[in-house]
Length: 243
Image (cartoon, rainbow, N blue to C red; front, side, top):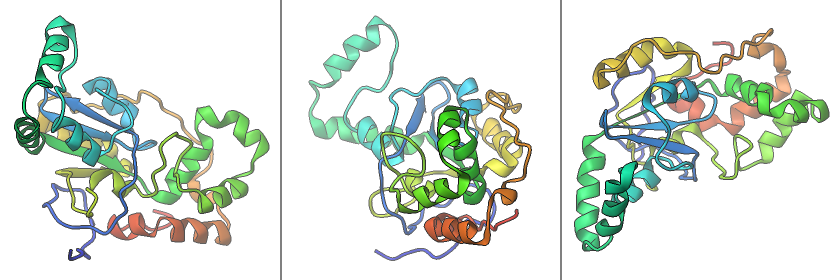
């Protein structure tokens, strides 16, 4: 399959295309039937704030590819006795019928998420509240070296290497309609909000300001390590160190 070399230079609605990436299990994907959308929660990209408006994920630890498979197999509406019954009855339908219905639903829903400058995101992973004990035992330099050889970009049960992996299928085909940047979260969320018909003001549900700019954490060596480790994201989303 041909590879698309074009970069996502700005945040805009994405034409379906082919991107080079490895598919790896991701974290959370949220299906909202009320707003007919699917939100991909890449950790440390403002997902908690978005979830505050849209609600909790129907099932955790899913990327878009896995969400598509879920919708092609199961009843994906939750809440109440009626949906519990329908969830059971739905499995009595022929698999092909469920697959076609789920495929149509997946394609009709607006699929979006956000990405973040990889150098900044690694600092955010290191400084996250849940890592307080880890920071007592591991310097940022050691953390970067751990990231260098890890198959995961965060401390979670499901490994995932690139942010791009959350938005593509097993062949690298782009499944998302819109990918915004954390660096201009409010502005890009406003674009999504207009599409969904929800509030354009995104609450800072877990604001965690840092005393230092992310560039101050790096040495030339650690900067180079992250650049090589996340080369796919850096090239695809046109990120630069210091931006």
